[in-house]
Amino acid sequence: EWERSRGSLLLALGLSVFLVYVIMAAQFESLLHPFLIMFTIPLAFVGTFIALHLLGIPLSVVVFLGMILLAGIVVNNAIVLVDYINTLRRRGIALEEAIVTAGRVRLRPILMTTLTTVLGLLPMAVGLGDGAEIRTPMAIAVITGLLSSTFLTLLIIPSLYGMLERAKDRIRANVLSGSSVRADGHAGPSETNG
Image (tube, rainbow, N blue to C red; front, side, top):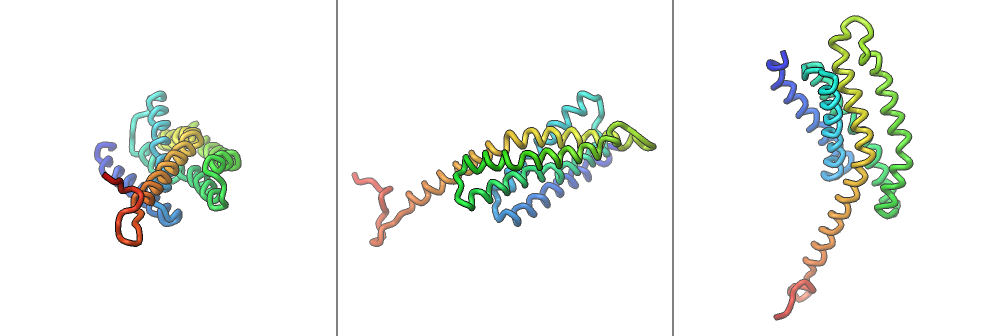
């Protein structure tokens, strides 16, 4: 069944990732920040694949459906974090201070939303009720992916945000200093004599 469905499921995963990116790009009015937020998806898949391997659960259609769900769920934590960093920076707060403050202020909401989702999926994961053999692998995939993504998001996304913003500022400064042109049409300070 997995072999027959693999192509259409991969297409569905790719389409869901693309649509999430487009919506975030429109919301953030940036191509860089949504890319950073999308980095949480592979962080989730790392946790899912490790858990599947350790528990001996094969990759199947229901597991893959869980991974498609993850693509939409795990970006929420990074959206909350990046959006608050952006808000603080618009208020004039320095980059490092904005990152630290956002991490401190948004830690509890991020952990609470993750915990409520995990607790909501726990009955499915432990296999209660009829049809548990179908639902359990999907719930395990979502829970483990969400847990790993949350933990890694809180560690990696702020660091990547800082690195990308500093690189963007350096590029902007280089472009502005290298493109200065005097009123007479000659190159500005970036041009050297003899």
